[in-house]
Image 1 (cartoon, rainbow, N blue to C red):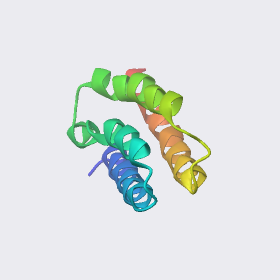
Image 2: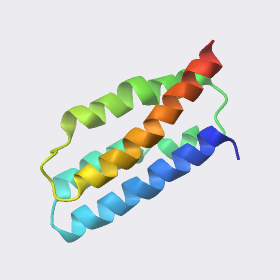
Image 3: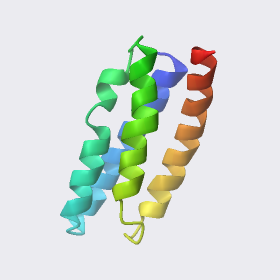
Amino acid sequence: MTERDAIYVQILHHGLLRIRYSAALGHLDHCTIESEHLHNVPSLIGETNEERHLYYFCQERTYYLDRIDRSLPGLDFTLRRYVELWTRLSQLNEANVA
């Protein structure tokens, strides 16, 4: 498994925990937003098309960030994990495009 693949696995892990937590609190709108964010991530594992990785990072990630309600309990924890992973993903994207 590549480092990029491992990052995607971690994004899925944190996102699925977020969905479970949000569902338990009755925040179903966030469950929808989170699942829309995650639904293409499994197909990025092992993907060799760099354009798909850039699309996730530039489009899907940005769309997710634009839609979330940052006041939800515990979301700050998930976002901190995502930011750590996205930072490394950005570095890998830059290295693979150059």
